[in-house]
Image (cartoon, rainbow, N blue to C red):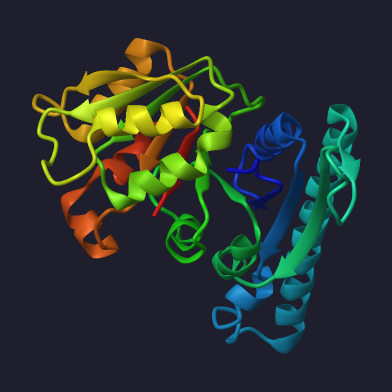
Length: 285
């Protein structure tokens, strides 16, 4: 598996923008990759057009002008922070990759962020999505993981620097986590240790944790197996407890093994990780 060369991260004005940019640029330097930062939003006036309809036209136009100017100023402020952070990290500003040197670009889009990610994500190697404030699944996250065919790196909102030492894999032999493991090989090959967490109620008709040990060994990656407590706590809780107990700073897991409707009714590992993970989580669907 080749190192990820093209990274994609959507940004928007919901807090922790500088931390998110710092973390993404740190990951860019980690792989000497190219980062596409995309700022996508609709004009505030477009979203409030119906609410303003009853106002006199002169008042409506004034409100629209103020709101759109404010959004533009905020957008320019974030772009200025991005340019400053690139300089601090030694990241080259360029629309194209720079042949093994970390580089980055900023692009503004007008429209739905989720639609942009669904399209641009398909021509990226890795999509970086920060935790939402609510801890729930945003439409952007769902589009990234369900409709791009690319791995998603869910990162803490306050991650200033990307670090990789110990990795935990939540293994159940399913298709989603199998894809996540294959797509995480560039991370696993750089880790100091890799631990495979396997549930006590593992299925008999799927590849075992020992099968995964052999697979990783063929890629020059040593790993060990730990049993996951999925009896007294949920699988998601058990995974994060094991992350804490083993001092891991990176987690690999499948994403959405059921439909979104079933996931919303029954909960699930993905939902728990979205709410509670405090380390980067690489997911695939």
